[in-house]
Image (cartoon, rainbow, N blue to C red; front, side, top):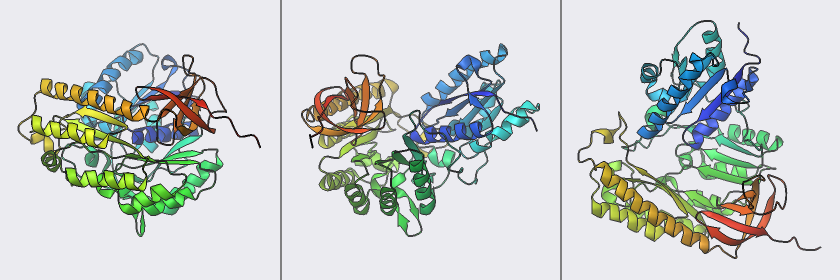
Length: 443
C-alpha cells in the first residue's frame, strides 16, 4: 500500500453550509491518513474542489477554476486534482470531458473514501469516478473544526423529499435520511468536550428532521441540554415544517439563537404552486406571524428567486410586497437558473435574462433599504455578542456575532475569541452593526 504520510493538500469549497461541513469531514479524513495542509496553492500535491450544483453559474465557476489548476499539473507542481460534492454527483462524466486534468470525481456520499482513491491514483490508476449512493454518514470524529475551533457544524440529516421544481438537491443528495438522536447528541457532547461552544445543526430541510418518535423540536431540546454548549443555530428550514412545536422549542431553549432562515422563494401563490413549494403566500405569512408571536425580536432571513418561468410583472410585485410586509433582516436573492433534470427545466414562458436582471436589481435595492431600517432600529440596544475574530482590517478590528446572526464590529476586544459579552449598538452601516462593550457591574 502506498503511503500518503506527508503529502500536502489544498481544499476549496463552493456552495452551502452542508458543503462546508463536508469539506471539514474531507479535511479530517485526509489528516487522519497523514496528509497536511499546504502552505499555499503552489505547495499542494493534492487539490480538491468540493462543488455546488444549485445554479449554472456555480458550475461554470468550478470549470473555470479547473482550467486554472490544470496549468499546475502541466508544470509538475501538482500530483492529484479531484472534484467532489453536488456538481460531481450530478455531472461526473461531463467533469472529465471538460476538465481532462481531473484525476478523480467523488460524490456527496463517497468523499470519506478519498484517501483510498488517492492511493489508487498514485499506483497509476486514473481517472476514477465514484458517485455511488447508499453509504452510511461519515463518522463524526472524521472532521475538522472551523479555523477558531469554537464552532462546528453538525449534520443531523441528509437529502430532501420536498421535490421543488427548480431544485437538484433530491438528485445530488437523495431522499431524506435522519440520524439517530442519541448519535447527534453524543457528537455534540464530544464537540463540547473538545472546546466547541457553538454548533449549527444542518440539513437540507433541517426542521423536517424525524427519527421515530423524535422530531426536530425534541432534538433541539436534547442538544440544548448538553453542558458546555452556549449557542445553537440551525439551517435551512422549510416553512411547512416550522410548526408551533418547533417555535416553542426555539423560544424556550436558552441556547437556541433567535434567528430563523425561512426561504419564501416567491410572494406569488401561483408561482409558489408552479415551484412545488407546498404553501401559499397566506400560509407563509401565518408562519411569519407565529414566529414573531413566539419571539417578538426574532431575526428573519430568506431566499428569493426572481424570473421563475412564467413569472409576470404583477407576480414579481407580489414578491416585492411580501418583502415589504415581512421586513426581513436579510435575504439571499437569485435569478432563476434552469437545472437539467428538474421539472422546471421544461416549463414554457421563460423570463428574458434582461428582465430577470432588472427585477433582481429592484428586489435587492428594496431588501437592502428595509434591512438597513431594521438595523437602525437596533441602535442603542444591548446585544449578546460572541467574539469571532480579532484582526479585522481597519480601526474596527474586532468582529463578533449577535444571537440574531448579525455581524457586529468593535474597536477593541473585550475578551478572547469565543467569549460572549454585552455590547451596546452605537451605529449601523449596511448589514453591519458597530458597538461598544457594556462595562461589567462592580460587585
